[in-house]
Image (cartoon, rainbow, N blue to C red; front, top):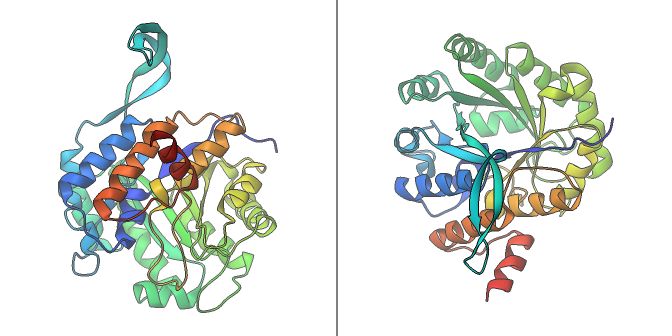
Length: 329
């Protein structure tokens, strides 16, 4: 299958990124971060997680975050003509943009209580998560794979009945910190179960970043053969510097949705040695070089990365972000 001409970037920084940072950002800062990411052209920005604030204080106030983002839209560049200014302040040519579009603001729900809270907060897009590794599942959520899937079935059914979008995450698809190698069949089994219960999109996560391109391609192809490529997204961590290579291998299969995190924020507290997510800046830079459309403004995303890292007291982990920052100095 040939590479798609457009890739949708599923931005996970405000949830998967921030929840693994030691500093807790206030609700107002998280709202501003998401607004800035939307202004940079991202269509989908993961807004938070309805988990106990005792377990994840970084995600406390997710309901308030959603409330603060009510009516949020993004521009997209392919329709309506408006005037723009050039870098020297004079008026340039027309910039073709569509009327602003609503932003998808998914929230993670770990259980029935989280789902109820998400409904109360008027969430329109939820995600559930399961693991391809039994050991990881038990250590992460204190439930085995089958137990977790059983708990999600009524949640997904209720969400679909309420008209919500539903995404399913599968973690440890290429390796587990406790079991090591994870068979492709395990990833296929969990992804198929999530798809069967009604998840419209399945994100395949290399949680500890051990995958290499051939393994990533083989696993993704095996899952897609069961649920269809149009339902597959990929989510690679960059522990061994393989995330972009793995994405490219999967793009060649026809994958059109890729998860990433601004400034490479995040990691996994249950996966020792796991570094951050694939940085959105690095992903956009590669895709632009390949001639693949994203609708995302690289400079604006990099600026968001610098701002949020300053708030966290951390250095951006994106190499592209670092290179662009150096040009500003």
